[in-house]
Image (cartoon, rainbow, N blue to C red; front, side, top):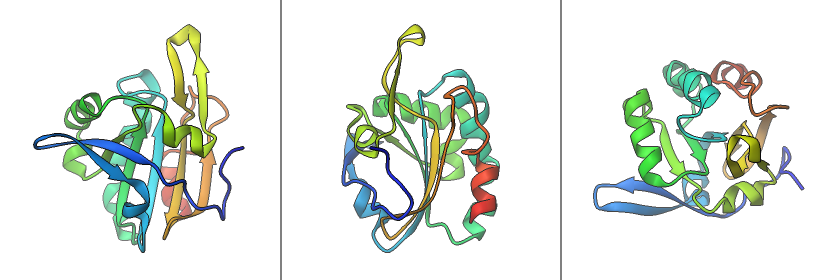
Length: 162
């Protein structure tokens, strides 16, 4: 079952690349008492993710922060090394987007947002979506009908919902 507006996000441990290597991050620790925008992509460096979805948040970061958002988080079923490289290459790191790895698809599956696209080699990946989270509770949820689209989950779309 997929997560819905009014639900709490699932407690899951994600990974990020720190100065000494991979570090564990508990998503609920980031959410407690804070307002987050979380968006998920099927894969780092993949077409729509790289050329549309992530850039839509990079270019809207100032406006999103102006709406009282504490953190913008990008999650993908990739390892933390890939996520870190992707953040650096795209300007997401400089923009302040937190890039978190859901390497085992634990969070993605708990959210009910997993899919497999075998023809593209995408196994147990995340659907493309964006959520607004306030103190751990989902207050807005936008899921794309097709992982190749980036309309309702874009930075511009979420900015309108803030």
